[in-house]
Amino acid sequence: MIDSTSTQIIVDSLKTTKAASGSDWILHHVMDGNYLDFSPFFKLYLPHFELFGLDLSITRHVIFMWLGSLLLFIVMTRVAKAYKSSMVPKGFTNFWEIFIVFVRDEIAKPTIGKGFEKFLPYLLTAFFFILFGNFLGLVPFSATFTSNIAVTAVMAIFSFIVTQYGGMRSNGAFGYFKGLIPHGVPILLLPIMIVVEFLGLLTKPFALAIRLFANMTAGHIVVYALISLIFVMQNVAWAGLAIPMALFIYSLEILVALLQAYIFTILSGLFIGMAVHQEH
Image 1 (cartoon, helix red, strand yellow):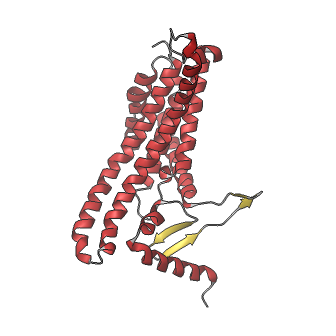
Image 2 (cartoon, rainbow, N blue to C red):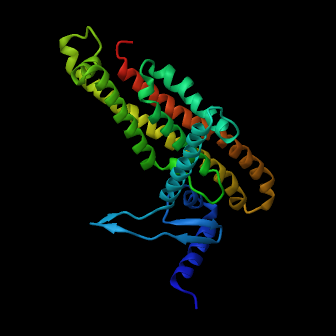
Image 3 (cartoon, rainbow, N blue to C red):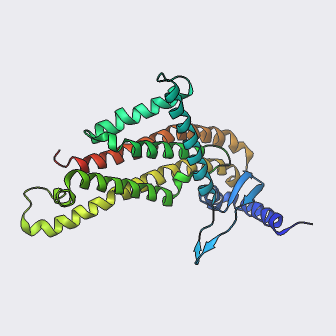
């Protein structure tokens, strides 16, 4: 006998095939969901949880976010243990040291300046978390949790909190907010400048969240849109054009995965540096 779960899988597969010529097919693969794809015809549905009316279900983005965090923990723990046994990096440790030194010398130090060491752990965490998430999304039948606006928004909020903490720690709470207003502003313009500067504080994390979300989502949409040409045109001959172009965009996604981790981290460093050293 066929149980309800099997029936649901068959129905969803038919729906997906039917919608292959439309935008639903693309959104099905890009957006979050309560399932894991193991093949075009098999899904594993995740359990549903509710607490006080709030949907706390585990989704595929959550699963891959846990997986990315676990991989990051394992990799960095192994690198740290390697340094305890030998101060000369080699092999696996040497590979990851390249990225660590890059974040330290090319991102944290130039953007923050004096006292950058206090913020280096956060910048390293943000960089590698995004990097692992971006590359996990390139694995077939996986999910890119950095293309989820909720994930990028939370990361941007953390950057905002670290920025405000750094600014108030270095300049004092009153001195920090006073330093946001340019010197020599007429008294009559102060109310307007206060509103403008306050909105400026909020637009920085907003830009961080949207930039990462949009870039990681756009690449995947382009790849799926190119592949969908085969179904839209209903002619397998289009595969000769669609698949090479999709593979080209997919190779660019590797560069984008690295670039977006770099951009998010360097912008966070710039915002922190501007808050910490307001006099510059």
